Image (cartoon, rainbow, N blue to C red; front, top):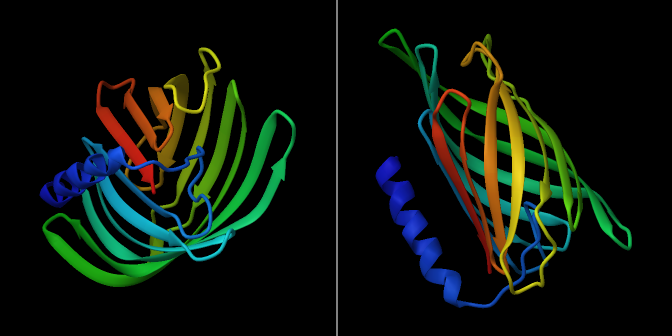
Length: 217
């Protein structure tokens, strides 16, 4: 899985030479392709999606996460729907709905089971040129197991820049995944946005580094 993600990451970086548009959102304009990858100590994922309309996107995703004796690998297809967008003069507010279906492998105490899953997710985000906030909750139930994930993110930009210049942000992320972690995971993160590239690099308060890269073309 890690090898595949590294190859995928290199492929994304090679596309940087092309011009495109990017907003800090899971989906952009009709006809765009958004690819992203996340690499961390306990989790990694890779996904790519195509915007079939200005409000709908279809994609594929592979994910791996471990914690408290669990090792979970999943892969599936998803539909992303923009339920609401409010554009103001200096801000943007979005409400998103993700619906993912696929297969999952759950390994614990040398026992492994495979199953199918249906995983809905809702995300609300608000952003100005200097302030950012996000709340999301993902439902993932497999048999009697509960792996729901809740996230809260908030931060600010150091200064306002032009579209073709790098804009740095400082973001604090808080995440909790049921059954896998005993406590909420806090990650101070440096975010860089420049034209087609969206990158997060952070280290949790326990010292675990992670990187997230998104590219839209």
